[in-house]
Length: 242
Image 1 (tube, rainbow, N blue to C red):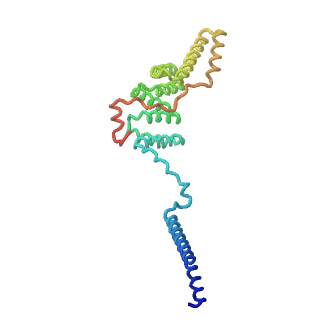
Image 2 (cartoon, one colour):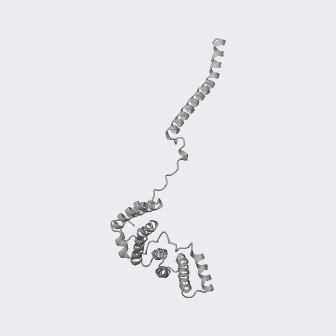
Image 3 (cartoon, rainbow, N blue to C red):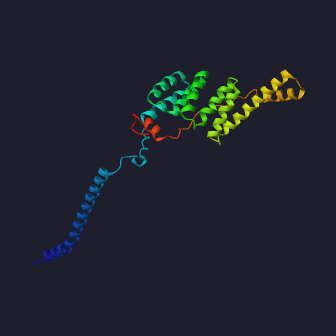
């Protein structure tokens, strides 16, 4: 074999592993690129949309209201907005369907008081004390109306009933104190007409100054009465739940 031919053979045999290694390296590079492209495609397919991390779970749904509760809420909104005529219309419709609803009946009395329709308010609260004698609040508001009309004996009796029903009813004690003071003032005034004295006159003036800006304070809301089985069944007529 010619010397130059043998030299070319030796060079080719030495270069063959290097070329193979380069070919292998190129194959690995192409495989890596292909794998990276595949992973990138998978990431594009399954990645969360931009800003998805800021999405929070929706708030729990508001508890469902029964038709009666929805009607009560609508009445309370009208009263809070001072729409007393509209509230009375809604109250009348409500009580035709739920005549034993003590809360709305109490609200009825309060609305009538706000409108200055005190005689009607007295009728409403009186009926409440008869149907739900365990509730002190109607007695208290009845007393406030009687006191406003100057009927302090009736106011005293109503407040004493409120306290018997709830010995911890603080506002009834406060109102009763004012009513007793007013009764004392009236007694002093009668005494002064019969036999005026400086002592009685001073006491009457003291009470007059103390009571001038005062009147028995009403309460704005009555708690639900304790339900008997009969009451509960009656109140649940036509309702899907309580």
